[in-house]
Image (tube, rainbow, N blue to C red; front, side, top):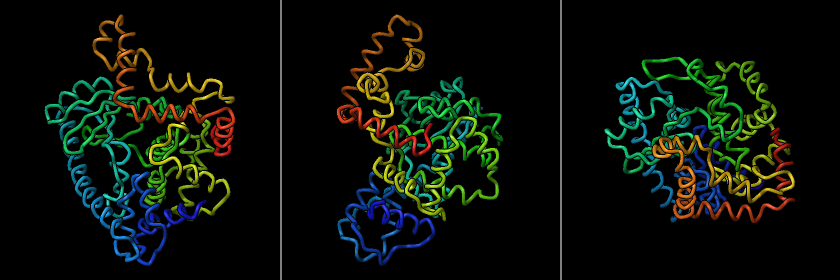
Length: 380
């Protein structure tokens, strides 16, 4: 693995183990760029805050980022408590997901940057949730993928999921959590997975991104901290049997090994180094070019059509879910697709341009190499 990536892992690991890198020297500009790409600038601040080798401009940026993230973390923590009260008062069963729980495993919660607060609730509760949240000052931003999006200034974003895992990520594990209530214990109206099922969920979420575009370093830090925290409570027989059921055992073992190689005691290997390079080069939420190659046939023959279909088209049932008018009057479905295409072109231009660049770069040989790499990683 590149020395830059090794330095980055060293700094993150130092912080997770409660230390600082006061005497470290490296390419601070590129390390900061990596931290931005992987949404981990605050961990870099914790690692280098007493390091006199760091250039002044980087110190200034890291300090500003730290101050903002401390404020954001405090607001998100307060918001989670507010959401729990709002949902419980309205009698809405719910499960908080992902970062809201994982952040508590870090030495300081603000080290784990979160874009959103994610919560699951049954689909038949979503209209009630919309009413409750809009009355509490949130604006409804629309439906995206498998969740409704709400926003409240200055930077609180809440995603209300209709499924625990997105079926479009094609892990198969979405069926394991459908419905999820039989896998949870309730406390009032808030429900939680036990450590083993939460591990299955977290790894399912990680893998979904990993094999469809890529996933960032922080997700591997999450899993290392999670395994350390719950090492005596994880039922590995159950976990492995679930992964075997969905033909995910090999890749899940490799993802686990990479997490423990970076932030535990797993020895290095050529495979783990290759996986690490892929993770670093993917950024926090993956690359459009990787997604395009994932969607393509082995010979790359359907690259453009596959990318266009994934980006512009959703199922008719999903379109009805997103539009009350279409739900009541299906005759307007073609118009809804045309409106969606125009909105994507004009409101997601940068993202669409990245997809088109990915289509241009993904020739048959590139697709073949990508598919072979994924098979080496254990993706079947």
